Amino acid sequence: MTADPLHGRPALVPELVVSDIVRSLAFYRSLGFEVLFDRPEDGFANLALEGGQLMLEQMGDHWDVGPMEPPFGRGLNLEFAVADAAAMAERIIRHGWPLFQPLRERIYRVGDGTVRVLQVLVQDPDGYLLRFQTDL
Image (cartoon, rainbow, N blue to C red; front, side, top):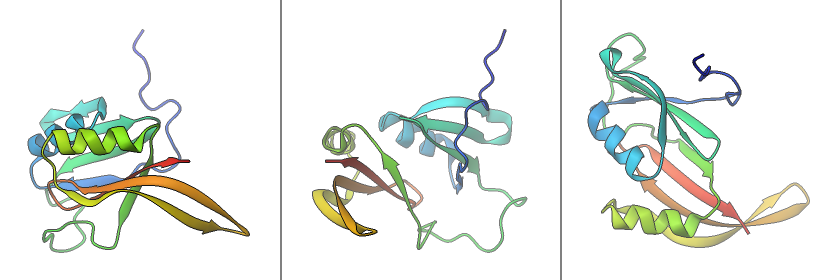
């Protein structure tokens, strides 16, 4: 029996339009994402990292709502909760990806309290901004 890759999916799974699916897959795999399922014939892949998911789709004309110009995803950053943001920062650097923002501790106000996190930011090959953070 084949496992159902849609079972237990998060309520929100962003789909990113990419200019080169092969290059994007290499980037995301280098950061530790795994391919849950793909449709190479459609230029599509569903990826996961520590419970978070996203989809990649080769640029085409069926979902585009306007002209796509790099960097893609302006005004959006995707936050991934990871067990070890410092290890993720090391992995990003080891694979030669430029950091958008180096590893640093931040304190954010949440309601009447605060949360303290360690985070690192990197852009994917199309400019989508990814924020990996660990609660401290």
